[in-house]
Length: 363
Picture 1 (cartoon, rainbow, N blue to C red):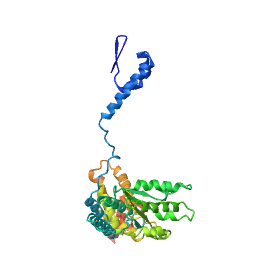
Picture 2 (cartoon, rainbow, N blue to C red; picture 1 turned 90 degrees about the vertical axis):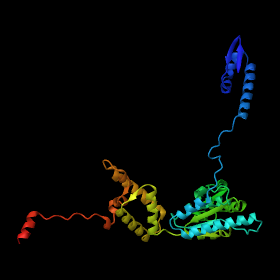
Picture 3 (tube, rainbow, N blue to C red; picture 1 turned 180 degrees about the vertical axis):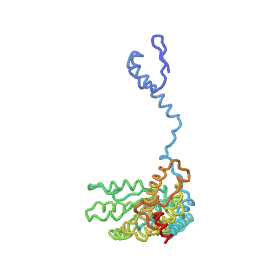
Picture 4 (cartoon, rainbow, N blue to C red; picture 1 turned 180 degrees about the horizontal axis):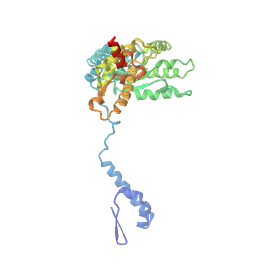
């Protein structure tokens, strides 16, 4: 656009420069009325340009997520160490829902079924992993629209003041619609007495399970004993949760399999001696497990500690090779004071003085 004043021509380069320079327009054109008129013309021109411009590309958050691949998710389920009964139960649920959908498509009756579940077991037994796979599997067969997992515990649901817990819980439920709401240590919601705000969260969740029965699956998880008490604390809980999955502790062989898989995944190679030492360690860890046994979490902690010790050892080398960077030795698995006696290198025997040996030979 061009303006002429006193025989001189002025070029204005862009709509942004017009709008940002209204006061300059007034001086240039000799009056504020002319500047206002010019600004309106330019705003109209900008609006027309925006209307004809192509839409901006959508962000990743705005894009509709791809439907998960059923076969890939089932393969991931099969790759999990142990949990054979859990895997069979999950596949049975998937078959049930696939056949239900086929019956619906053929105009046949489908009896109501609850998909809300209870996961019971110690920490580190794969409950969250299985819940995430289930969410994807249900999306893959059309039961859920999104197939995502929203994981919370008491702190993510309960607020500190009257009336706020319901609002906080509703926000979490809103995020979980179309997927799975996974409540870890769910028994803590009912452990505070009659006036505890956790009970308000329970009531809010129960109502959402009824109102959004086709959009929401709820999985409550925790230790076996406390979870049984939690479910009996409210009649609505027992009636809505009728599928129970028990996650057993990993035995020594399974713990070793998880550790070996972590090493392979991250390009670490156990020497034969380290392999033997690790097998002995995880067997002992399982056999002597106590109340704080962490299953897979203990394996992850051991793996991370191993990386630190191996890094300290390799860093002391003058020019480590690729094989050195990958190799895991027995001393990388334990602190020196924790090294099993069977793995410690025996101290060399003291040699007798030469003179004493000669005297003995003369005798």
